Amino acid sequence: NAGVTQTPKFQVLKTGQSMTLQCAQDMNHEYMSWYRQDPGMGLRLIHYSVGAGITDQGEVPNGYNVSRSTTEDFPLRLLSAAPSQTSVYFCASSYLGGTQETQYFGPGTRLLVL
Amino acid sequence: GESVGLHLPTLSVQEGDNSIINCAYSNSASDYFIWYKQESGKGPQFIIDIRSNMDKRQGQRVTVLLNKTVKHLSLQIAATQPGDSAVYFCAEGSGYSTLTFGKGTMLLVSP
Image 1: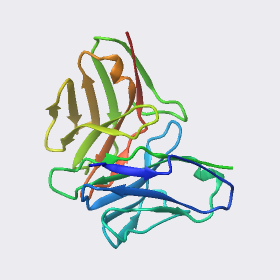
Image 2 (image 1 turned 180 degrees about the vertical axis):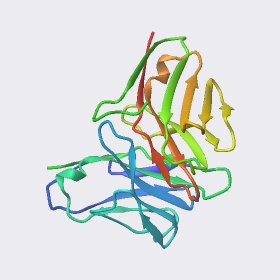
Image 3 (image 1 turned 90 degrees about the vertical axis):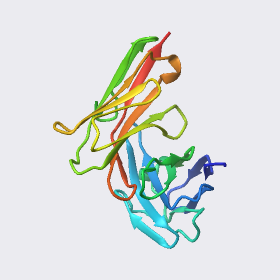
Image 4 (image 1 turned 45 degrees about the vertical axis):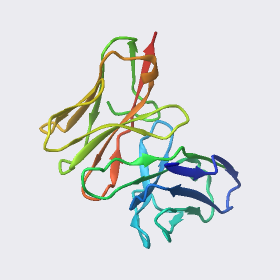
């Protein structure tokens, strides 16, 4: 298994540009999520999904859109990038319920908005 | 402990010492708690978890203690090694797998 993969690893955008951060997992996990991590901060939840066709907002959803058309993929879209969105973005996935509640994280995408 | 502003609290230990990293959580209704390790340039990696009906759980070289009375979680690492140097996060969750993360503690292990 490749686990959770994210592309790109690094990206530089100009203010106002749009882009999509890709996330895929091959573990058949129902739950997928996007976090952002800023210096000296923990991870903050942007959006999450409990299955294909179902998404919901996390703690900091403004400026981001998501969709979940398949179990495997959970892309994060920045519609009009702002310098405040400079951050490291992590995608994560896990099984729902039961005793396996640990999330597996991808390697991250480092985004700089100028 | 929890960070203030942009600066992570840092714990510096010698190789071979035992390390204790602390975390205060906020939600008394959380069902489970997880410790993650994050090395520089990588995503968080699961270390150990504990459910709210337990007060202690042991893994390989790690022990998590949960004190629900004061909403406190700790991670003990035995015989700390240079490879343990990283940022450690606690996280709390309930129901579906939505987690709330602490701000992290940096552990520095010197040989």
